[in-house]
Amino acid sequence: MDVSSPLRVLWDAPALARARAAILQRDEATIETQIAVSEIAAPTGEEGERGAWVASRFHAIGLTNVSTDAAGNVLGTRAGTEQGAPVVICAHLDTVFPRSVSLRVQHEGPRLIGPGIGDNGRGLAAMLTLAEVLDGSTLRTRAPVVFAATVGEEGSGNLRGAKELFANTLSHAAAAIALDGAGDERIVHRALGSRRFRIHFRGAGGHSWTAFGVPNAVHAASITGALLARTTLPTLPRTTLSVGRIGGGISVNAIPDDAWLEIDLRSTSETALRTFEGEIRAAATSALHEENLRGTRGAPPLTLEITVIGDRPSGETDRSLPLVESAIEATRLIGRDADLATASTDANVPISRGIPAIAIGAGGRGGEAHTVAEWFENAAGHLGVVRALAIVVASAGLAL
Image 1 (cartoon, rainbow, N blue to C red):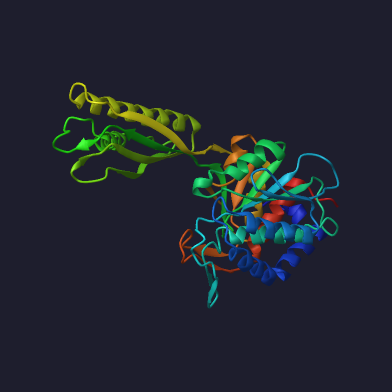
Image 2 (cartoon, rainbow, N blue to C red):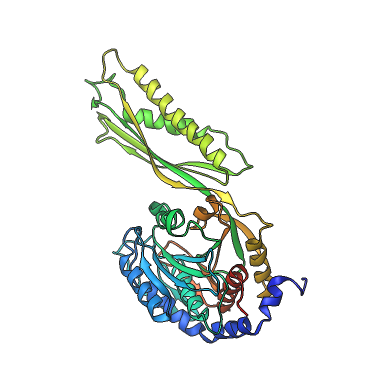
């Protein structure tokens, strides 16, 4: 590695060296924070209690302009020595677990086990440690740094918090770094976009014998699924299409008056997403016509409703941009090999809006995400936080 590289020079600066040592000293406190925040329920759409807890920590750390926006995102700022576009550090508040699931974290040797302990208890804890270390006095950046705990990142949340954040309050951001889960090697710079659809057929229904000939909603849904199963998808850009759920009908001896299916379409290409959204709509329309034509003359026809139930934008932060280059260098500096990756995270939104953005793990090792057996091990976990700090300082500039 070129020892004169910009991040290498920053890495050896006394202020950053002291901050790296402080992150190691705070390692136990970071774990305590991770456990505490993970035990606060935050199902998607119900993040308020966890958000309030984070806001109180923002105040205690001394961030300014602590506030909650229209979506429920919690924001705090560390001023820079200069005015200008901020660098954003975000970590999502929500989990996939309903309130009925116990969030009590268990200790099994070096392993912490608990729903959300990694995704995203680790990201939130690392963000709070960064806010403490980047204290505005012993370590200060030229550009302001905004810390954002976001809502609606998981599943049905549809990146709601990030969409609000980067469309309004932080539309002028210079760069964004999302802290999501464990790990210290992966750098997500390609945003995996998705469209999700609910296709709903409705009709008159009736008795399976006496009303036979009335168009069958389940038949139409099944035809749609069969047509989509035969769709040829590109490998470059990689695109996937799956029927995830299907249902309808009330009895084995009744013609269903109602049937539906839900479809997940994903790609790294917005063009591919638009193309195959057209294929999905065409398949549903074709199935509607086919089943209605099969009905007896005068039978009430089926109707079709297509609803978009998820929309996550795609895009890419180019490998050659300073943010990605700094992330690769920072990964090397902590002794890891960078893994450039594709995923769906809060970073999708700024990427799609032309803001350089990445998502990274926040250190340590984890597994079984989105299950009650989710686990985290603090294997040199502080290095992930150090990596994140180096990326932030490289992006915001170090005030010497």
